[in-house]
Image (tube, rainbow, N blue to C red; front, side, top):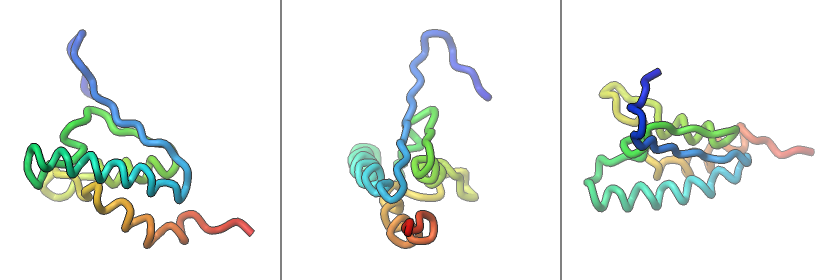
Length: 98
């Protein structure tokens, strides 16, 4: 694990859990990433702006989507992909309790 020089700024993105409610941070993160892309270009990803991205439960799934690298060591998914993932896979990941 890398270290940061004393007094340097460390940026952390923490994403809460909450099952299917992962759509809420997905929507907010999509909005944030779109604003960053408007400033820095279409290839900007949230992982480019944070030193640490962490989450619990469903936030961990979102974290993985934002930080997992592709073959070019760029984020595999964009924030705009999160909600589509949830809508498609949530019934299997978070089945309804009977």
